[in-house]
Length: 260
Length: 305
Image 1 (cartoon, each protein chain N blue to C red):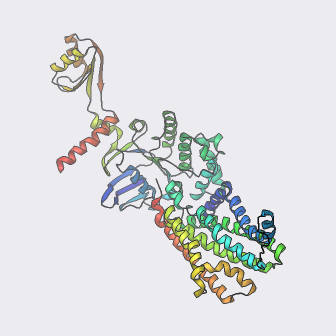
Image 2: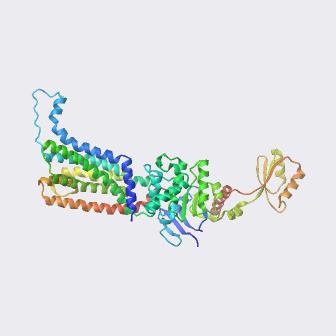
């Protein structure tokens, strides 16, 4: 069965020709480098802007490399993820309502091919963006705040990639199951808003999918117990697989919604 | 052996039957027009045959087999293409989805694009295509995998006269090599390239047969006599019991025992000495038959109720 590869190439061409493979990684790069740079040069920035009252004293918190990596992760979690959701939440539903899906669905193509090619297309953009964003962040952090080992960098990026695979599988599955508007609402509620709720109330428990991104940073210097990290990681992988199965099922069920 | 068998195909949306027990067969290498007013269920029927819609009941079989997606080419009324792909990339992609190898797909795609007259435009993005070019691209993608059955939903309705004649010419060529089922409400086109017509109305198949058969059945031949002056027509009409219809300057007469031939009519006209402009034996055009089939059954339904 080769059809998913044919469809995946189509997805790749779209990402490439609509510049998604350029502007989204650039956005992540910007988000990634902003925290280490802004924090490091905060005093200079304030001095340059001026207008500080005479005798004003400011105590800059002592920041460590880990704090900057956490800040970068937070940036990705808010801005980055919302952009990824917004870009990919219509990936299946919009093709159905726009009519381009019709000419694909009349051919002998399985729902799995359709869904998985979409998921991989979206994941490619997401993973590339996170990789470039983190490389930027880690580079400036290590230059300005002290060394970051290769294994730390690898752990952080790999963990965040696993989380992004979940985000994209959920987003694309929602797109398969609902119209674009409904899918977008649900994705925003489940991922960024869920993340905010979890960080407000989450002190009472240790394992939820939203914690994985932070844990990816914290596990590198032993701030959290590694058993929490591994349980969370497995949970996220489990939910991702579930989303894939449900997404394929929804793609098949909603074939009839393709506009003729 | 027939190529396609459609048996009691039904689609219900809620309690409404959009398609109601439609049955017909298609013979290989024939072309069939599915005709009917808007909302008659033509597109729904096509979608079910194409496998886009699940039928509520009934079956569609292509040479006895049920999964027919590999063997059909489908062109919807408004085909939508990915705007970021070139025509060639698009056709290659769908050819591969239908199971052609990369090499075959590339070769066949170029062939069919040349065939539909997009040879010099195949490297252009589909978003730059005009309506007529898109329709021809639609035909190219439908025939690239050499389907046994071509399903075309209103292939020419959205086109201007030039585009329409281009597409009709293409379809007439295709007719030689494959079986075509297409829906239309432009009967003039159906008249040019159809072996069989299926009339649909309110989800039901109300009339079917060869075009010649149906034309004969509904032809209702009449004489048309056109006069130079309307008052001549008036007086002539008053004197004839065969009068069917009167228009300005013209009279339509039924053909009966008294006026069995044109000669008989002519000799009776000669006696009058009126100034005659035109004399013609007319039979119902497909358009008139269309109106009749739609109207007659409405009347029937009322009688039955």
